[in-house]
Length: 312
Image 1 (tube, rainbow, N blue to C red):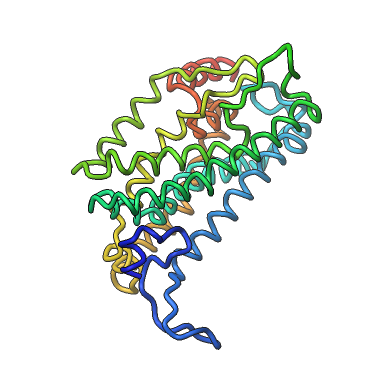
Image 2 (cartoon, rainbow, N blue to C red):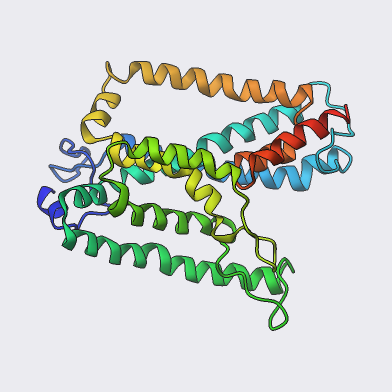
């Protein structure tokens, strides 16, 4: 494995932590990281459930709530707080899913950091080629599919030649392909900084004060760079902070016990807090979820809280 990494040949399929022999007929000397595999699986489930919540809100809950207008309370009564509970769980998954997914992407990109810090130009070149093949090519393919479907299927976009094609504005989940490409490209420039996480954290906070240009056709944010910059600190935490030694300590029964305990407390308490806040009023759920998506400036959320409170 060390030889593979030194040549820059490792990627997401390269084992990150040396493991023991595989059981149940597996090949001896297998080095899959079960903790990381489980993390990937549950995060994929969280993202899928999050999108299911979105469809549920659009097609079921809001209609049953009497066609709730934008940023206004539910018309229908909710004596047991079921609507607020669903939205609280959705907000928790919003704040957990993509930051954690970005963290795992950083862990899977530690080989890039090693190449950058060691000055391995050949390894960086090999990985850069693979980034184009695994990220940019799929983006071009799926962005084209989504644009065709959005233009001639749903009518979300206006057709050519009267209107430009918003090809540089990711549609749906394709934003993550461009963001991951940008994060990995930035490794060779800023990974050697001593306080790279602090730097990206400050920039991630500052981007909330910057407006995002939108395309004329469809009103999509340009390159969706708000989210890319906001989640960059999580990528570098995974790539530069969570080294093999740190991961080993966190996943052992003694060293990781407090992490699991804190995780369970946060998992239970956070949806409960969101549910209480949303049920109590004073916060617009529609704008709160946009804020959680990191797609708008901070000022939008502040104005929304003030305006929404006047309707109670």
